[in-house]
Image (cartoon, rainbow, N blue to C red; front, side, top):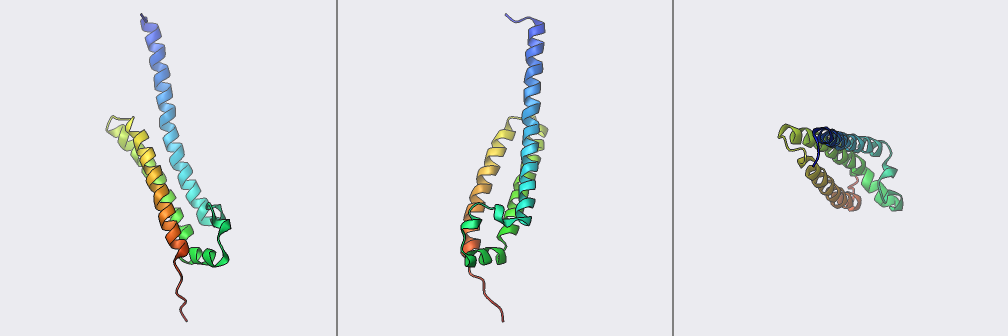
Length: 127
């Protein structure tokens, strides 16, 4: 049987761990926003960008792939941070983890599918 002192210590540790997890969600959101900004400035950071042919690189830049990746990563970061505060506002902090996984998986699928479309779509030259 635990006495009151031991329960207080266990409760404090639980709160400490919970706060660390909560701050982790905010840090991940900020990280996604930073990655989006870096991809906008340095498109070579996109996975597989260096393997593209010159024509595919020109297509991806003219179709706005770096801008699209910037928007998706920033939206992922903003949704993670907003989802964290929404979960706290609903008094369900455990909901934050589900939101994190959902946002990351959906964002990855969107980036892969639409990134492939933007890379392969030919640019019509205007003369």
